[in-house]
Amino acid sequence: MMTWLSNHAGLTGLLFFFLVFCGIAVWAYRPSMKKTLEAHKEIPLRGDEA
View 1 (cartoon, rainbow, N blue to C red):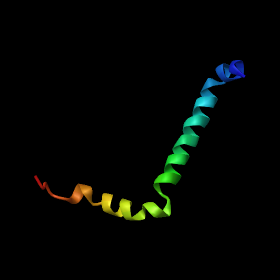
View 2 (spheres, rainbow, N blue to C red; view 1 turned 90 degrees about the vertical axis):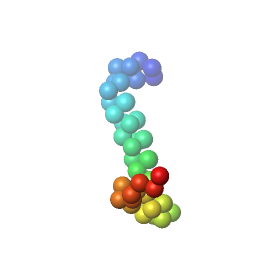
View 3 (cartoon, rainbow, N blue to C red; view 1 turned 120 degrees about the vertical axis):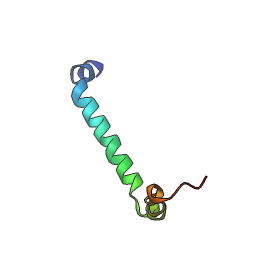
């Protein structure tokens, strides 16, 4: 198994990071996060409040 992983390290890394990216995207854009995303989208438009 380790020999196969080392011989195909590029493909293994690509698949791993692609799956991690897809998992993060699904987690971030799930319906229960809508309120949080709506609040965060206005952060750059707020003035300095210090």
